Image (cartoon, rainbow, N blue to C red; front, side):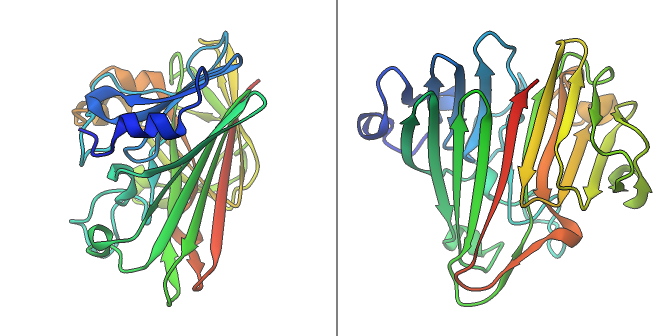
Length: 300
């Protein structure tokens, strides 16, 4: 259950007819957006975007019907935030996968309306609960803007007296009609690490098609990608700034069976395109420095 006072947040920050703060699944606090051009949701748990639906369009993000809506568990789907490491922590395999901020309750800072756009700003920072895994002092601010496009801006600040290093990813689960019929354009000729084949480096030839378990880190990528979905008859375009890796993931049937919060058949309804800085493109910040990574999602 949420530990924040949801009613108080709604009183202070809600915008009548536009943005509400209320209890969502599992009693977790969420911000619900409804404007003439789009609807959406973001949970304080993990600062986790779970929905963006332009008016008259299909939902853009996949959320598992079996997701656990509980403290200490990541929501399966939407846009989890991976920080300060991606995957397993290199020097501690007991540490939580993909870091710890996706299972933390973030602070809701403000909700603002600007014309037809609505922005939700959340923050989290270092403390006793994070230093057991990551010694650095930091502050993260996440700004989600709902409109005809969805804009995600993650700003990392080094709040300590020493340099720090981190990885980051916006692990977006896109809703597709059938992952085996979808394709991703924009990565032709790009080198990638194939995590399903002992991290061997390979080169993408043509568009990306999902024909088996797929878990790839595309290297030195900064341009936009297009996810073509012939079943839902749409294209999702992902553009980004200050991100030099792109992760493409789908677990396929065998791995999906091992994931209790996903289930056997739902893997066909999701395809992850992750705006990120991971591996050799991990970032270093000196004391007082900031870095902002941005992803913009639109329909074409």
